[in-house]
Image 1 (cartoon, one colour):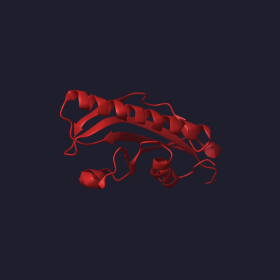
Image 2 (tube, one colour):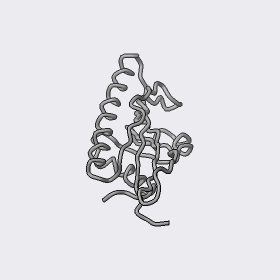
Image 3 (cartoon, helix red, strand yellow):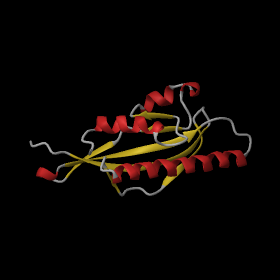
Length: 149
């Protein structure tokens, strides 16, 4: 079943904790709310999916909507050495791989289309007061509508 709405994507992302091993929490679209929470209330490793940019493409019966999300996969906690920090980054890179693999599997199962976009991301090192470590990347998902105007 192909998703048709942003709300369906939100529900999908929130459910990824059940299908991506090692992912313990997800926040979608509440960018400022997540930043204002105490780290003790955020379940790490955490996926933060920011509110997307939206683009309407195609015409007539082939109408589609593209959502470009910035995603952050991160953990937190004190690190005493650069070696410990690099190990946490390595762990989060592996989690990113599992997450991206899941997204592609679900795209192959016709839940949505993944549009090639940024294939690179950037490191999160000692980010915020929570000492977050991880990676961020962008992903564009395309949904189709079968509704007539």
